[in-house]
Length: 189
Image 1: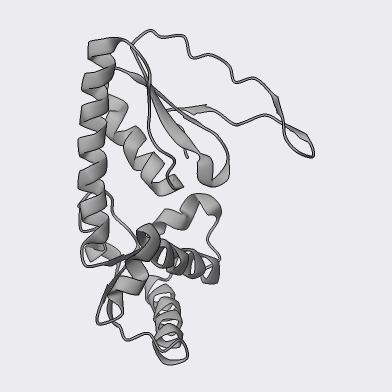
Image 2: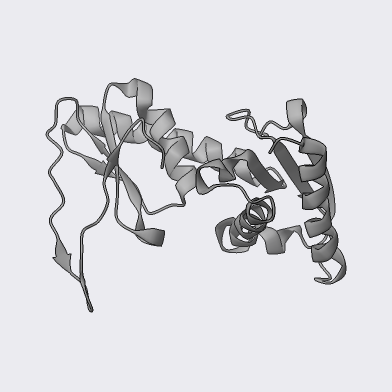
């Protein structure tokens, strides 16, 4: 995104469409450039969209599925490469900041668990942005992390220091043979 003003206008056109044609009762504020930090302060974004209004709960239903969908649509409209989708962020009622705090608490509890038991800890499946945040929260623990699984079932595993992460074995799916992907931090997720 070279021209942030034009990118912000493109996102504004998406939001006008959602609020007029889609009849969602929302107010939104779009911040581009220097002030576009996520409310949790975790990462800077090029474009940040904050939504409020009577239909905000619709955006947050099913763990923020519609909110993530709007982010995805905005990234596609801006023709961002998949690795750059994080440059656009939508939030409503502090949902993302609260989720970041919950992920931080979960990471801290997992670190304690792994250090106490010496056993790996498997987090529940989550979207790519949350997996990335989790990897970053866990980065300074001295423990190893890996993402495993595919699609919506992809999850993070925290391993004890020096633990030999087992290679994932191929498995037979219903129609073809697939091998799940595994990445170790600090690569992209």
